[in-house]
Length: 357
Image (cartoon, rainbow, N blue to C red; front, side, top):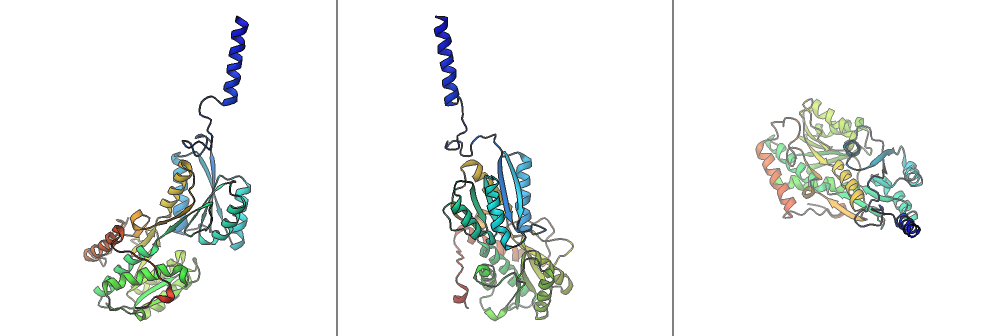
């Protein structure tokens, strides 16, 4: 009998070993899509050189915040791309090095990500921020910058009108021309036109740095626009905006920052910022990866998602508000924001070649 009992116990132990008693951490388990909850997952963030670019620093800061908090078992690496060829090399290398999640930031990475995700669909999970990658294995997070730009336009037209120049001109120092960046210009113009419907396209001046880091060129262009009488000049060229900020302080026109709250007591001429909360989107991607796994497709994020906005309009700001941004102006811009959030005001960007007024 004792031998029979011993034999039964041995068989039970063998069966337990083969089937894996308890939670196996199977990645295919719908209740545990990320696999073993204690297994550290490696995430590669592939982007332009970060530097002081607020679009990128928000993402890096969010990853560090999540890792430090211990919310998820994760390690991450920020892989910076010094030139165009580096995007393809870095994305491919991250897959080869066994990263579990590849998060690409920026339009430059769309084509190489498409190639790698097609070639290695099961080697990693893939997502991209700020552009669309048309691939069934990739999640694309894109923004509606025209909604925030509309609010900046309301501010620009209102401030200019209070300064005695309701017809402008209204300036804009942006990074690049073309349809890809037209949503910023279109939203800005439409917002200004909501304040003064009599405006014409000749009342708007746009120049381009053709760089995200050329502050000297931005300053030169802003000074030229100021000389033409602009009370407000919209800055939309990333790190190059620092040149527009310098020009604003020197020539006493008003301007806006981009991507994050760029207002500062040291330069009260920066009266608002068109914010794009890339850190919020990064957190969305991290949470999705660890909870459901990345769900491929395209998600478009705007004011209603609290992902874009304008400082002092949708956000309180961290610095005292310049008095030129009056309570009436703020109220008008907030009313516009509410209409956009509710769907009463829908901002669909047309082709630039078809736009005129």
